[in-house]
Length: 120
Image 1 (cartoon, rainbow, N blue to C red):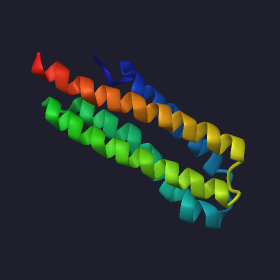
Image 2: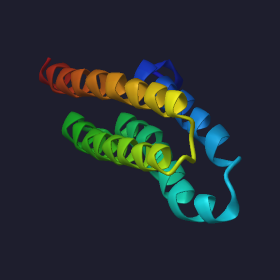
Image 3: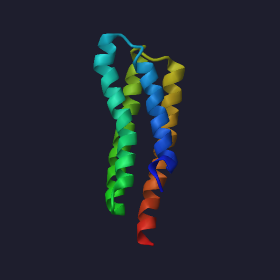
Image 4: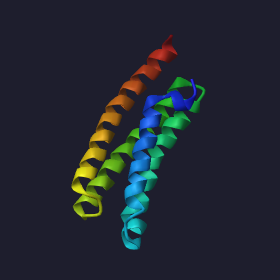
């Protein structure tokens, strides 16, 4: 299976692009502080899913997916900070956070299935 066929990967890329579209509008100080960290951690979600998908052994894949989950949680924290600092509209932040919560559930399910696939 190609990485682009993996739905959690496509969704993480979509969310990352939505975050990027918000952050590029911020003033320099906001982009240089919260913005850079938010973009890095949200982009890391997709990057880690892709890296795990490319790993040879299922245990390696699952381990790298744990990094993706950590970056996902970090992204939620920075989106909350951005919302609290009026850098991103509340509705947009809430929508993105909800998308990430859903993605986290799907990532957890995927991680469980990775072990099942490896045991077959």
